Image 1: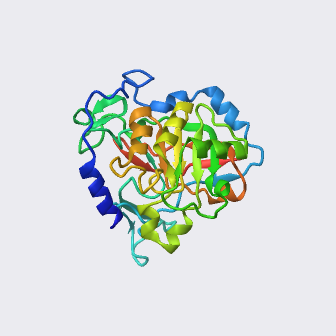
Image 2: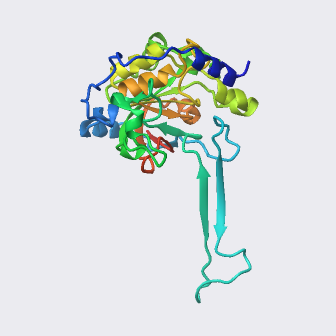
Image 3: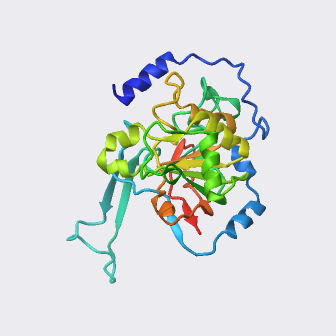
Length: 310
């Protein structure tokens, strides 16, 4: 049975939640719209900057291309529009020519950040916002990714492949509190309020060998693990997988519950398809993390290339 078939069955079996849920208002107040980014402050930025001792930078974003596997119907297309075809007129005595480009793409493709308007619970999103009050075909009226402040903080890479002694962690392997604490203890990198936590599983190796499997299933945080990270006060969670969530799901009747736990219930941002191989190879378990996403007004998700510096 395919992943899409399993997901459809799970959605059909999932009971509807009632408004009696107690996950809103947010700990940051009923009017808050930036979630766990509230944990960030100048002292956290200064402490994170002190982690730079080597001067080496790492691009955490993948290259985006038309053949990058993505959840259907997501796709990417770029069109180069030229001032001429190489034989046409030029401009001025300096013979200026130019190229321009047009991008046709989903914003939730390749390396991306999920904003707080992405995953909800029974049509309610972060801080209990009702979909009918802020979702519009022309863009989100609230919780758009343009409202995410710059995220400059301490990054912690949890090398789950090294913890388990494998090159690639198998799909369906959940990282819950026990596994997270074991990785933290092994590396000596305690998780602190305001941190960005990044999981390395070696999952990008599967992209070349089995691209359909690469995006359809993978290891990742479980619900308990997501709840634990949110309680620690992290600002964002990322992984080298397409959903930053263990798939197959821990409970097939509760699909994407990790996303719900992080985004809707706790305002913790999700960074998918991060490139972690270089950090893991260098044993860079602690680093300065910098993210300033493009500010497309009303966007649900955004393609990003965060930077780790050590």
